[in-house]
Length: 201
Image (tube, rainbow, N blue to C red; front, side):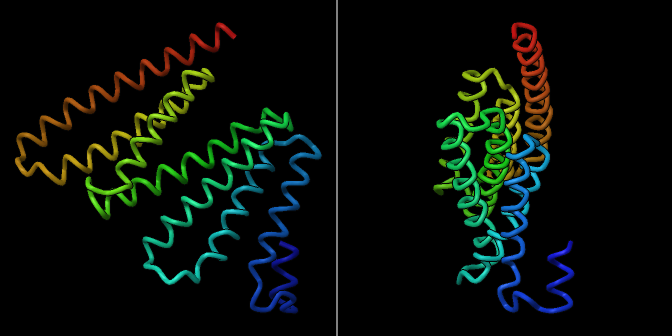
């Protein structure tokens, strides 16, 4: 807020005003590691996302493509930083925050590409890959939130494909009934797995 006030009153950064977002993100990041606070780390990553988006806003691509590539690049960046810090045993308990941010950005980018380009596109493969990695990580780490992500985002992609290729109302009605039952069952099983894993720990 102080940086925003200085910029509004004195135009310290001029045309480079998004730099204040980077400064804020770095400040949050320092405080998060200094005081071991996951909430502040989340503020750092969300502020970095805003800065990252403004820096890429000049790309000569369409509106949807800009946000999609921004999400992919940001997701890869955050995941890479999280992996590097975890590998070097630096605040390993923060790793889940990095993976959560990266997962949502990457999944949403994959769904966006699937919705625009359809089944025959690299985004379908990206979504399938992300679902597979997320599910595998869930079983390896016993963090079944990522299995939930795989189910929900995978179901969203599958539903779009079905809606694009089935035009019969009875078939669509049957699909939604059966698929919603299967997803509800999967979510319940994930809940049971997470409880079992928590009790074992």
